[in-house]
Length: 285
Ligand code: SAM
Image 1 (cartoon, rainbow, N blue to C red):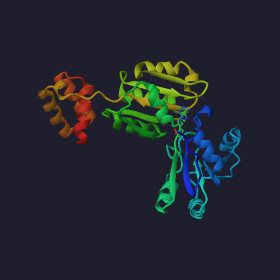
Image 2 (cartoon, rainbow, N blue to C red; image 1 turned 30 degrees about the vertical axis):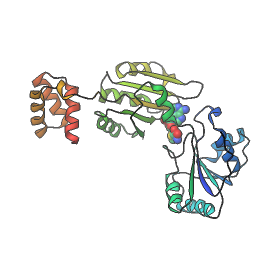
Image 3 (tube, rainbow, N blue to C red; image 1 turned 180 degrees about the horizontal axis):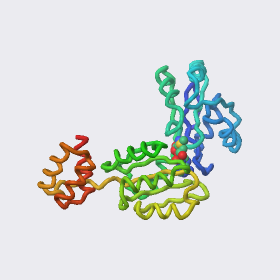
Image 4 (tube, helix red, strand yellow; image 1 turned 135 degrees about the vertical axis):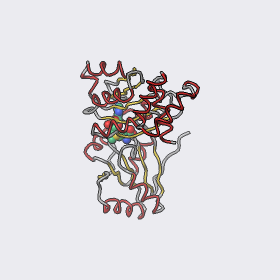
């Protein structure tokens, strides 16, 4: 059953397509046509979308660097009874996109905030990646600088849920190199590129195979990416003997996680990555 939407004085958070324009919802078009104002991240970019759907609603710009006065002005319009729709360049606003500040302030001011859901790159990727989707972690964009990115990846080593993040084409190659360095050749990773667009590619493999694959084809380094990492195998204590655990615990008192795991592996013969994951858990406890 579909219900006609009568925009009232509310802030509508409207998802738009991430590639294929046919992915916009009927409700999104209806809302965008009927509101008094559309706040868009980039009015020129969104102008093309609105034109495509014959939407003539007035636009104003709103982004993360908008001054407080811009937020105030939108809140005043909403308080005076106007309806406003927020859209970003693609997908769902607030998901690695502007809008958080506006939503917080609107809700605090008692203004109704209405979701108009639709496409989001992260859920689009997750539903086709073939990785566990019952529990997952979304990390937005990873740091652009290599040292910070590697540090971030190291913090994720023992995470057993599927890890998802966004990456730009300029860094995708370096990013896969760093993933291989930190997670090793056996970890399964899926790259979702240009989702819903002409060159859509969903490619999953172990990092040992994924790096040469992406290195050998520059086309695979172009476009927009969602990266998904299979979570760490949960280490059962039984796989590590009591003696190995004892050695690891003693070494952890004196050494870093990496050094302790490496030395414990040499002493006990247990696989280094099992001990490393175990040591990370102990370190966080
Ligand atoms: N709000 C958007 C959403 O709902 O997913 C995300 C905005 S964020 C600024 C843009 C990033 O999302 C891109 O750099 C890319 O990592 C990812 N992304 C957006 N569209 C995509 C697509 N069609 N295919 C793959 N990744 C995409």
